Length: 502
Image (cartoon, rainbow, N blue to C red; front, side, top):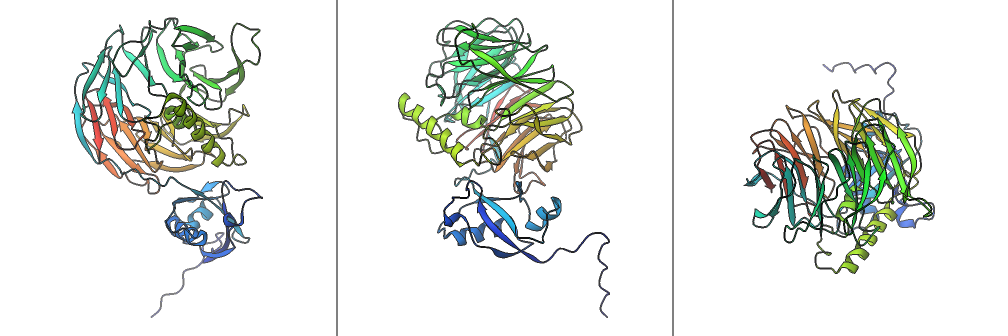
C-alpha cells in the first residue's frame, strides 16, 4: 500500500527541480569576449560546485580541468545551487546569473604529521614565520633571542642575541633580506638572515613595548628599507632601517596601538585599544615635518581592537615570490619588476565593481568583526557577529576570497572576504584558538589552539577537520604556513619549534 504524499510545508513554496542560469566570468564586463559569456542553460538545482565546474570547463572547451568558484549575488556557492538559493532567499522565477572565477591551478597537499621537533628556546615561543620565499624560518620568544633555522636540514642556523626583554613581534622584509624583531622594552632590531648579525643600531624611540611590525611592500619601494611599528605608548612610528632614523611619529590614538599594517595601495593602518583604526597616507607636499597625513578614521567597535588584516597581506608579504620559485635567483631589479607585475596582475584580475581590491577586517573584544573598504570609505561594509568570546586573530586567504577568525570561544569561523557573509563555523578544538594560517592556494586553513593541537580544514567541506595534528605538549601560540605550501611551523608554551609536512 502506497504511503500518502507528504503535505507541502505551509509558507514554504516548493522549489522547481531545475532553473535557467547564465554563466558569466567574475572579472568580465559588458565588453568581455564572447568566450566568457556562455549561453543560457537549464541546470538542476541539486548541482554541486564540482558539477558546475565540470560544466563550465566543457562549455569553455578546456582540455585540462580548471578549478572555479561560483557566485550568485556576490555570495559564493559552497554546497549546491539549491542551498545557495534557499540560504540567500533568491528567486527562481527569472534567469539566474552565476558568476565564475578561476582559482589557483596549483594545489597544496594537507600536512599530516609532525616531522621535526627543534628545541633551543628556553621560554615560550611567541612568533614563528617563514621567509617570503619559504626557504628560511625564524622564531622569537620569551627568552629574548631571535633564532634562524635551516628549513632543509631542520637544524639551528643562528642564535641572535641583543634584546633585553621578551621578543613580542617579528617580521620579514618582503625581499627576504632583512628580519625585524621588537621587544617589551620598546626596542626594534634588524637582522641579516644570511649571517645572523644585527644590521645597524637598535631603533629606539617608543616609550613602551612594541606590539606590531609591518614592512613597506616591495612593489611600492624596491629598497625594502622602511617599516612601521605600533606600541603600547599609543603611537606608531615609521622607520628607515638603512639610516636608522625615525621618519615620522603617527599620533592620534588615545590608547595602545595593537596592530599596524602597511597596505598595498600605499596607505598605512593603525588599530588601537581606543576602538578606532586610523588610515594614513603620504602627504602630497613637503611643507610639514611629517610626510604622512591622517586620511580617515574607522570607528564602529565597542571595545578594544585586537587585530586587523588586509586582503593584500599575502601579496605584500611575499613580494616577488610565488610557489614557482621563479624569483629565487633573480637580481634586485628583476625581483622588483616581478613584485610590481605580480601585484598588478592580481589587481587586474579582481572585479573592482564588486568591491575595492584592498579590504580591511578588524576584530575586537566586543565579539565582532567589521569589514571595511578603507581606501574609499570610512563606514563599515559589514558587521560580522557570531563568536561568543573575544576574537583575537583574523586572516584573509591569499586570494582574498575568504577570511577566517579565531576566538577564545574555541571556534574558527569562515566568512566571505568580499561581502563579510558568514560561511561556516569550524568546531573541533577544545581550548581557545589563538591563531589561523592559510595555505597559499587558499583551499586549506590551519588553526592553533590552547588544546596543544593544530587542525587542518578544507574550505569546501568545513564541517569537520581534515587533519588533527598532535605533537605539542602545551598551548600553541605561534603558527605559519610556508609561502611555497610545503610546511607548517608552530611553537608555543612547550618551547619547541615543530615542523609539520605531508
